[in-house]
Figure (cartoon, rainbow, N blue to C red):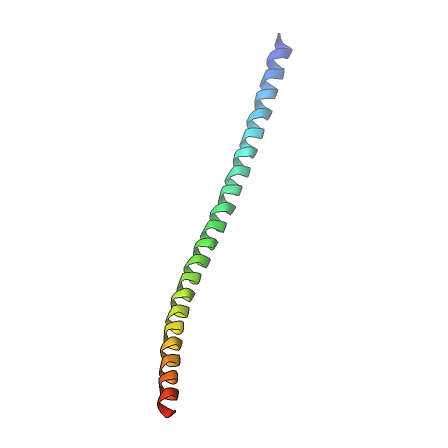
Length: 76
């Protein structure tokens, strides 16, 4: 009976160690996933800013082309 108690104590001790390592691994994965999510958010923000600037540039280019077309028609 004593050997059974010793074996169960040893098994529980190692099970607790395995569960602790699994918790640490999951915590590390969650931390990495949070970092990836934050980076993706920054890229999305930067891309949105770029798209705003690009749309302003495209609008300006459209106005410029319209004025150049009008000036060209005026010269003829």
